[in-house]
Image (cartoon, rainbow, N blue to C red; front, side, top):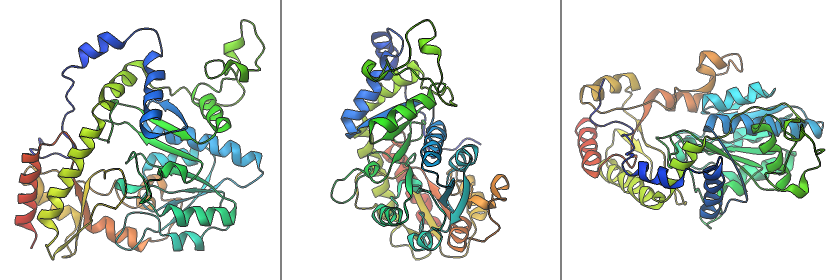
Length: 381
């Protein structure tokens, strides 16, 4: 089905050919420059680029597993009932036992009171800033400190998220992941990043994402203790994967980064148009933009009239307006993860049954957003 009003439009590549010709040179040049430019733009201390947000989560989980094992703690992680599937898969692949806690009532993120009640035996807390809405990181950090837990933030649906004091959210915890998938805030047409706060964690993440290599010359030759010789670059100190971002994707990401501020303004304006059009409707709940830096991923709508998402889907599809569920719903209600828990997470289940989202992506014109607002306004009272 071809939607007139999709969640995401096509990212234009007009002008990229010229940029590519000017910037593709020696191997890994753009990878290094993209990492440096991201670090400068968002004040990131250490960043490792990978080929997707899902790969970023896998590398981050493998890194956290190694750190936790060294501290002789159990590999037990707690996640929100709304967590992207590859984040859950990454934890399982890294050897973690996974616990689930419900989301806030009529909200998208981990209920911190439920977290505190279920923290026993947990070594890793994995908050997801679901749909770009920030988790209550100050409360989560407090719980983590009291219980000796690490924090891995899945921030793949946001970027440049800051609290009301301007503090970057990646500073709340140990490792944070970003995604540069094309519908997200910054596109490299496939890519992701693992953000760390110290050099040791950065070296660990770099090694895992590059075959488990021991050589560190590409980062800092003074740190490399690997013996010189023909096997210098082919010595491996841990189990690893090969998930480096491609030079082409890094080049595209650099090109998109030049217009990041413009795109963010467009997303925020699109959100504002929908919010103003729908905020007085009694049959739905809409969610004001949080008072933080960063923009939201999409525009969610919770139906209070008892209607299920499937019914709304049939209506809006006929109008050529694309709506989507909350990433497939509650984690353990997915077949792949039903073995994790047989509990019913009531808040998440209620939200999943009656909440959908529409797009606010920068590829959608203001005219399209206004038409979407009109279609939604005509349906809801």
